[in-house]
Length: 301
Image (tube, rainbow, N blue to C red):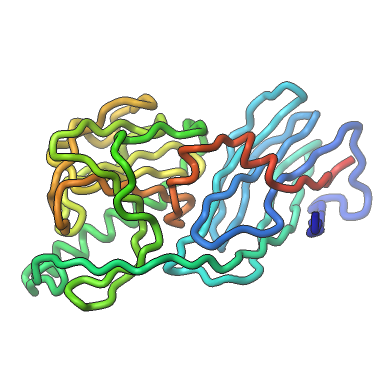
């Protein structure tokens, strides 16, 4: 394995960072653009206020007691629309023994090819009427704020539950062409779901936004902690409201064909610290399996 070194700095004691037990970070040496990956901070001794900074965004992690000490888990990724292949910094911070530590790592994001899809929709959905511009801008701001929610308590577990049992009909990363006009990349995963199909929450969490939006129709956004946000679009009925606590597998509403659609389906978005990623592979794996594919570096011995 090509091990990429982490640079370890201690804010308060720069040259002497000894401890009785080891503290380590786990992260990928390289990963595909658009795909989710796992990170972890673990130690035999307690620590506080762990954070991870990725693509310029800092997220607070939960501290949990594990079999051999303490551990913090994170899910991260990159949005294929916004992030290009290259080498990016990944920084961990934590407080231990009354000292603040910084661990500087790097991840190489590899190019991944995504296909193209041509769709025919109502012309007003490609070029909306001017009278709708205010509404669209307001809804975009609300959605952006919801997708960038970063609560500390980890409520997500892996693998997530499938929101519906239908097959995937449009994969993440498709370059969408509407009525011959190239648009952005498909930022979610589409499931076959006839109108009225119950939609279940993949993770436990709290509802941070609901609405009937111009593009996404009936919508629900759920915060599961550490920057993990699920969003469900084109719903015919929404059965939850902002502030509701949601259990994994709980029904949040019914699928439909509202907003910009060509037919009934569920559009599911998984946002990790504001980066919308490909959710499909996560339905077939776990945090343990993801971390086993990563490398670990001891940063305190």
